[in-house]
Length: 399
Image (cartoon, rainbow, N blue to C red):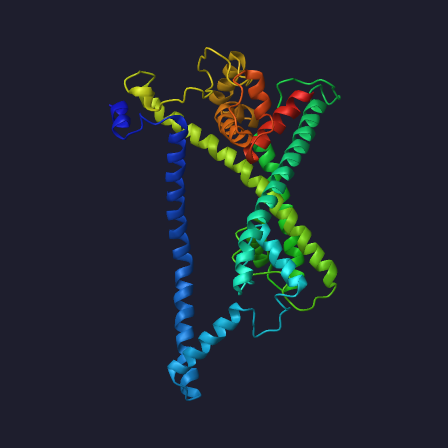
């Protein structure tokens, strides 16, 4: 009965990747709905209170100065236009001098986009389109290269620590060949790094900008995650004590924070994918292993490597022999943490197929079909997930 219900829901015709995509889309929609409900409950009373207070002040001002409501509203619209052009009541530094423009292009290429400065001329808007296209792509490449080196260092350090503990604290040169760092361990280290950077930066912003420490932490997350609301923006006063040192520290903290949070987001995405795989396996269990519905609730893609599934050939030189697969399933069934390499081995072929298409499009011809040449074509990887995969495989095999 459970199997028939799964077929009736349209789950059977889906392959594993499509099922994961649809499940993730549904979870994101649910996440958005829950977030909207929470923020609406928290912020709407404050919004209503502020609106009522503004209405009282507006009426009091018009009656006190004998102004018509229409004239005052027109004046306020003029101020809004000036505000968009960079005019403020308080004295702030010029928005479009060289230092202000440099701060602006930094928010553009990092995709933070605070919004406190925007181009007002047609030429500036056209130039921004092309400038941002190249700059954002180059910055994302920089973040990916940073992530590659960060994962390499973390993997080497964790492996060295493991080898130091492998023989009662005595250093060893070999160590288990199949050892690899856990994705959860990497995520924990990145979390600690992000918290440390955010706390240090918040202390600086609270002391120099005059914000509360909570507002400073909020600004750090908004800036480091490249959300960039623009309600709080650092380094906007015309003059600071030790101004050069502060602007340098502001730049370094934002750069380090964005790199760290970017890496953390990519590692968290791997954990989310593990959760999705677990949910999909749970959805297949009602069938009890019977072939009562096509594809056993989800059709697997022909070239997808799935743990504990027999294959007639090796796929794209991925190290997934039966011993490793059974060991992987044993760890998953025992409830232990899934290491990053274990997870990536089960998904490397789908990534390699995407890389194959990109490689063929770039070279203008079909890639060779031999397993050796395929491995060469895919060795560099595409995107942050591929970079982490390649670096972890290299660091776990070098020793």
